[in-house]
Length: 276
Image 1 (tube, helix red, strand yellow):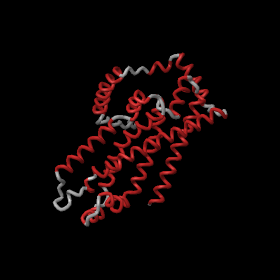
Image 2 (cartoon, one colour):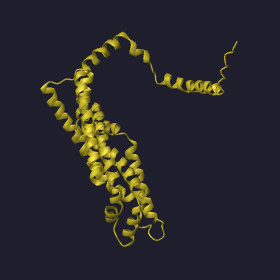
Image 3 (cartoon, helix red, strand yellow):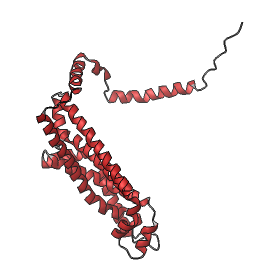
Image 4 (cartoon, one colour):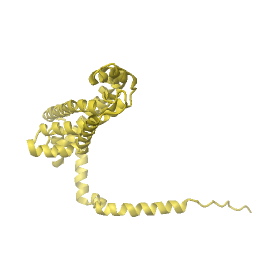
C-alpha cells in the first residue's frame, strides 16, 4: 500500500497572514473616514438610474445640431488648451534660462555661482514650485470667481500650472544633456540665449518637443475637467449632459476626447520623427 506524499507546509504563511492583518488594520480606518459605501451601488433606485444611463450611453447622440455643437465646443477646448500652453511657454522659457545651472555665466572659471545669481535662481525655483503645486482645477475655481464663467478662466489656470511644470522639466532635460557645447559657447563669450539655442537645444530638442506636446495633450484633458467648474469648452457641455443623465450625449463627447488625444499622439510622433 503506497502512502500519499505529504505536502510540505508553506514556511511563509505566518508572514502572509500577518501582512494581511496589518493591511486590513490600515485600510479599515481609511474606508471608515472616507465614508466608502459600495452597497449604495446595489440600491434599486441607483441600479435603475445606472441602467438607463448605460443604455443611452451605448447609443451615441448623432443629430446634426448636436454634432455641430460638439465640434464648436471641441474647437473651443483645443483653443483653451493651446492658448493656455502658449502663455505657459512665455513664462517657462525665461524661467528655464534662469534656473538651469548649466547656463549660468557666473559659475565659469571657479565653478561657483555668485550669491546674487544663486538667490535669483532659488527664488524662481520656488515660484515654479508654487505654480505647479496648485492644481489647474483650483486655479480655474479662483479665476471663475474673478473673471466669471467662460474660457478665460481656463486659459489662465492652464497657463499658471503648466508654466511651473514646463519650467521645471525643461531645466531638468537641459541639465541632463551634454555640457561640452554649452560650456564652450559660454567660455568664448556667448550669451545665455545663444548657448541655449546652439549648445543645449540641438541635443535636447526631440525630448523637449515630445514633453511639450504631451503637456498640450494634458492641457486638452485639463480644459475638459475645468469645464465642470464653468471654465468653458466641451467639459461644460458634458457637465450639463451628465446632470440631465443624457448618456448618448456624454458618449459622443467622450469619443471626441479620445479622437483629440489620438491626434495629439500622432502630432507628437511626427514632430519627434522630424527632429530625430
